[in-house]
Length: 481
Image 1 (cartoon, rainbow, N blue to C red):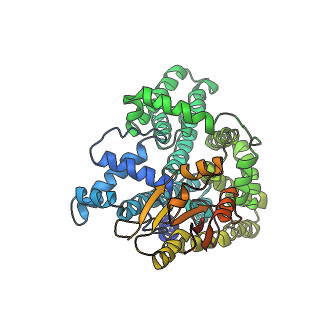
Image 2: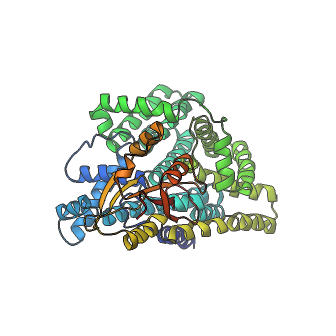
Image 3: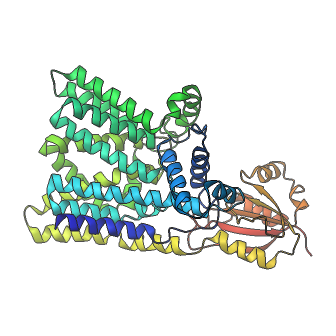
């Protein structure tokens, strides 16, 4: 029965994440982060062991490169043929492979959450917690992206659970294994490496007589896990340190303009729901009072929350690794709040399950709706004259070699920024059409300036402009025919 329930929940999670997995295709740059990961994974698959990219660690890139090779071997043609198609603008097969890999890790996270909840609270606790993650709109949305996040959620939650187990057993094997998992999680996305601090502290706080040995084994395990998962960061340490030193202060370097903790908590409130957050607080207290593994889990979970909550940038998806633990504690919180009244407990669990359904349905609807860039591209192909010259900026329709236009692509909006800074649109008047987009319903300063200088001939918007989906695309004609 328990195996069947777990399999059913994992199947539910996979189905929800496979729906509209082809969103945005055949756009090559539907999600800019996705396209970056795909590009560097392709370099690895082509034989470049160190692709020279350090914005993310290497684990997902190497797994994706292996997946590219496997899919190419199973499909028609050689890997070289596929790479040539990619260079010509056809990235569909590679993008779908990357997204499918994210779905695999999302399903694995749901399975791990079920097993952990069953071990700590029984089949019902594990099942409800797993269903909550399977239905969560933020996790569903980000599992549709071929980026590092789904893998990072899986490994961070696994590392938290293994760290908590080590606090109870404190064996040499457990010390190394927990460290290796922390290292692997850091090889997916750097920040889980912070879990090494509580892991090293456990033997000393427990006053274990082998504390130095256990801490040493954990440290070695973390180094091995990180080196195996992301070897270029070791083999090209100076380049990695230079890039990491440049990026980290921008994201992690103090609260900056953000109120400490508030954006992260607001994201949990919005994406997990106030009921889950409130019951999670009750469950945290229950975990803490119960002692043992669950106390260490709760303490480490709050440590990750605090760490993320003091970053200068606190995007909602940065906190995704907190969601499995939050749902586990929320389910336990409902049980404790019910004080043995099973009907009340099941009512609370039912409300937890029902609460995210409208937002999950909206997320799937948005993913299933043709992206505004595709619709704007179709309009352009129906209305642009053959031979028209076009300049397009970031997050706009893409054109291929078969399109009968002369297209200038400015991914960084450099031309536009220069024109705005000098208040001189003459450089853009060399083109017949200008295509601009922004992730806001109202015209921003750039769009207003373009509207004054040129003739707005088409706008494509809806349902909701939210990166990386459905930017408001505006097409301008520079001269009246």
